[in-house]
Length: 225
Image 1: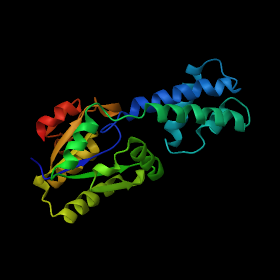
Image 2 (image 1 turned 90 degrees about the horizontal axis):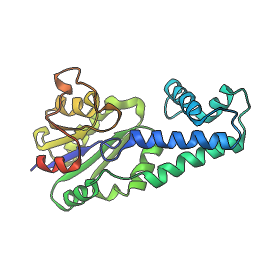
Image 3 (image 1 turned 90 degrees about the vertical axis):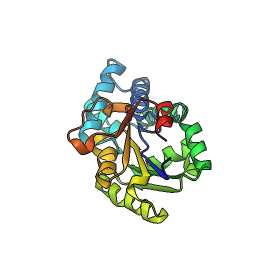
Image 4 (image 1 turned 135 degrees about the horizontal axis):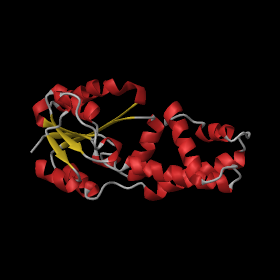
């Protein structure tokens, strides 16, 4: 039994990639219904995806840029319709992976120390944590700006110092070979890669990116705890 476990958030505790895709698809249809002069929601979704790729997922004016793509001014009623549809999907379909809540609950009742260390827009990440209702399970939570991914290593170290842990006593769980898995391995932890989300088929680029264990769901995770 490990003395501590570090979890990532997106595509580790819940399916982030498909959730965002569904939200953007719904928003695309809502934008058309509100007056965006597009031929189909599929067309809008493709244009929206390109805008997100160019400006980043945390850029606040995706829908305004989309209006410009169609040669119209940003109309508040169009923007609002897209935002409501997007957030309705996030609210109604944001759920932990099967068995994740059960396992987190069991671990929280044990002597195992739990950490949640994630990167992204801090407000958005905290919104997910609160909506998923998981804050109470963790002894240590750190939300880092998306531009500071390398800062995860100091945060891993800070967590270990706080609870007097050695790296070999810690299990690091995440979905990205070049992020959580690499950082955990570099520090001497055991690592678990969850094969979910947009990075599930990504091949490790070097030895430190290869996880100790690879799993597809939380039922499999139980075998390594």
